[in-house]
Length: 251
Image 1 (cartoon, rainbow, N blue to C red):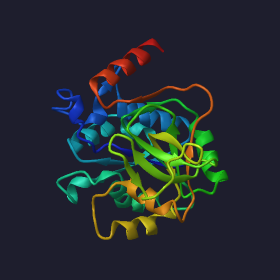
Image 2 (spheres, rainbow, N blue to C red; image 1 turned 135 degrees about the horizontal axis):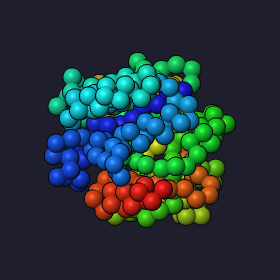
Image 3 (cartoon, rainbow, N blue to C red; image 1 turned 120 degrees about the horizontal axis):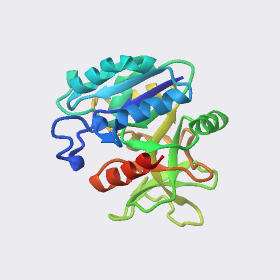
Image 4 (spheres, rainbow, N blue to C red; image 1 turned 45 degrees about the vertical axis):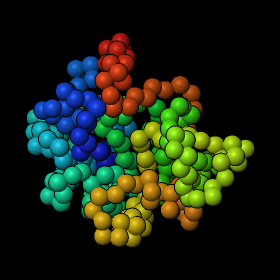
């Protein structure tokens, strides 16, 4: 099973912790968040993964070497060779294409998302729905939401703070579409790559969400909402880091 971990981010909101390291190496209860994600993916059978790097990328490489790559086949997608800025989510996936293509879907996981929901149930859901991409979603307060129909198929997106809606004209009636927040974990079928390349139109850096919003009108893209209780932390700011540390110290 294959996976990709996004580890190229700057982590500006976690400064000064990220003044001398990438966000992915910020520790949560004594263990770098990148390590926590790698170990979580290894637990479910991932044996090959790609990690993209940029900001303090050499420190990620050294960390992996020191840990003998956690006994996995780990490829490094070094985005510094293409741009002086990270390639964003869509560009990062496209540049990692050589390692992710094949016959099986791959997991994409943000390094700063720590969660314990059943990833294998998510993987089975993706296969059962013959989805181009499946996205972890949750009903929680935020500003930006995916819009899903009663079958949880993606139909659009909205930013409730600005009133922006994509695609234009999508029905915001909650009886028609329900709003769910993205949880930073995807499962993607390799068939996405030709479509992603066409969407990129020669660009190196671009986000994956605009692609999803274009593609969902023609290809099956689904939201997945885990059943039951599970933990989920987005380690994007100091207060969230503090909450996550308290949780992991207690378990």
